[in-house]
Length: 294
Image (cartoon, rainbow, N blue to C red; front, side):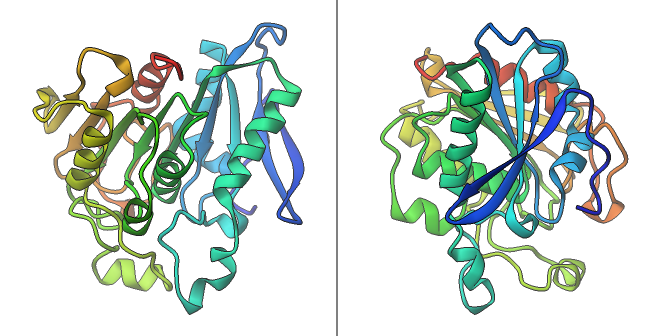
């Protein structure tokens, strides 16, 4: 992985097999007490971004040391998750990869190595990783307490073919000027996107359609509480008095395909970000307040 830095302290690479393929993930435990069951967070990188580079953007490993949770950083084959948007002749090999199953295998493997609280398993991702989270949320959400997404929703094809049997608690952040995962849904837009992404993904739900699907699923009520939390940043919160129905969507006016509050510089072609939000801290605060049974 050419764009990966050295392993952070307390991080190891774990190798496993899934679908007769060699797979791996990075496991970060830091200095946390290993005998006490702890929350587990799976952090999903975006397309073309290695897991450890994604961690440099987010700083989840440092937060794991501070908050005392276990962090798993799964790795997509070819750094592209099969999130349900990749179909057709260009994607035959990717279509055969069961990444939903792989992520559940990673969870099982971590539980076999660490004391993990099974009621507090979470998933967060950006871009292709966010859409992968949306795929898990819609297809096999039962083990996951809550999800966090930045710059991604879910594949139209995934949402059209199934309906979850349990509530799906999600926090989502999205920039209105995101050309790679458009706020209005569909595919990546613009000449630059077409030049950089040779084989684009299929259609994603718009942010508002994704919110409506989740609100309907959770029975979270039609009208959200709306709050401006920073200049150009609005948050909509749906819920019916119980954390089990929570749906929280942040809108960053003019924001691009970025991780708000990124710990290192992000490429300018991804667009504008906002220093007013810390997506890492905000996402963890949301996730950690949602156990599977609550």
